[in-house]
Image (cartoon, rainbow, N blue to C red):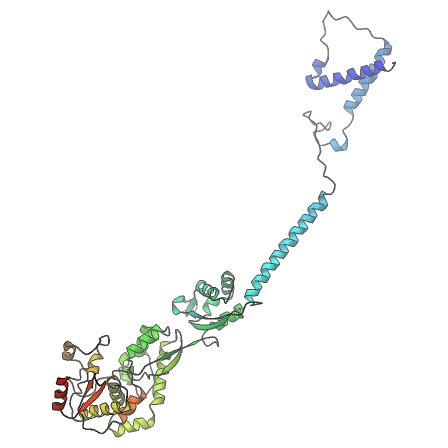
Length: 447
């Protein structure tokens, strides 16, 4: 029990310390001058422990803060505001866990990038793609023209249209990637109008190379020019087939220079100079081909078919090559299709030419009214034009169509007859020929 006074003193000292911390140092001391309180007398033995306890408390108060608590203001770990600063220590193992998470993120991102790169490469390089082929048409409408720094005209394809068309036909998988490739390689200026046979097995570079004029992938369009077509009919057909624009063909027919002896150079500027020489045949053209090249191909064919022997035969009859082609064009429009019919019609034409009589052919009158249907109207019959062979004798200024070889042969080899008239009998579906106007008029009156 001897130690109890010391313990009580220490307890009282700690309580005093807490009271001072809460109420301030002034409230921790008892007020002086209170006469009611009796003076406290303590023995030296009882004061000694109190002094030791107070010294211990002071020592504890002034003890330097541990390194772990030196985070506040100078003078102690509590700082200047009297609040205790708590240091949060990292739990063991957090460093390893964070590093592992970062590693997983980096590896995952790398895998994703690698996968995307591989997917893109399969399309760019045509790797492991399903084999598919399609015809792709780039019309001239999908190209725009501009002038480069050197003053030359450059045409550029609409890459958005091209990439979309390739995607729709299964040639590529990623239009956006193809557009990027085209911009990097300036492919828009390398493409040409036309129809191309492409495969999904072509890489991007091959696709661009294939869509150029003269490439092996360019598809030729087959067009048949029928005997008896006029130049206007032929040009409309070529336009509708996507081979060449009608106006471009008419302009080339009028103004382009074609070096053929059967063409009259003095008529340059007049498109009708080519009528009769666009030989009817089956041709192969590329879509959006050059107008002059198309016309040149048909003129080449005529020059090949109309041989030197034929030219000499025309001269023997006293006619030029143009005259023979013109007569052949009449036969083409009037005959029903048999060689006999063609030869007899040719004989009527020559007999009337020799007699200087008007040919009286409705087909020549209708040539100036190519949109008309059926027989010429009374108004057409009265029109005073060089093509009205009821009013004017001799041949028309130009052929009235492009005749085939059978009609050219009939013009060079007419039947030897005395026929001056013919009439198409719809009931018998053939031509009836007459030597006199009397027989002709009598027959037509009864039919």
